[in-house]
Length: 126
Image (cartoon, one colour):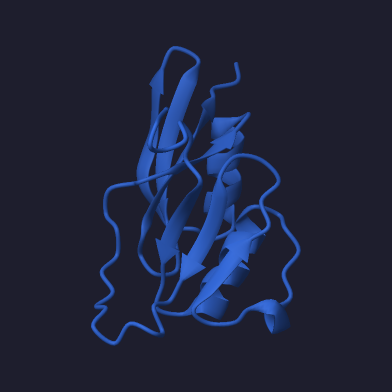
């Protein structure tokens, strides 16, 4: 018997401003957002697939010093990398790494409002 399940349960995104980040990630994933439902220290983004996504402002941890993550620790999936890149760029999202491609698979990086690096991966449509 394994000590742990062979699965990833969740991803934590650390933030300085929980409501701003909750609104931004909800916008990014096209999910409903109600500011009155956001209560410190964490907000669980209501994703429909994959692992849980939790935003954490560390309100109850006075020793915590926020530092943006510069190397992506997770990615979001898209069925059309180029379209997603163009749409995010048109909406003023900071692109920190242009599209890289390997066969029909590609990726690029963006920056969230806390300057955390987030990777977008998926299919390169022809």
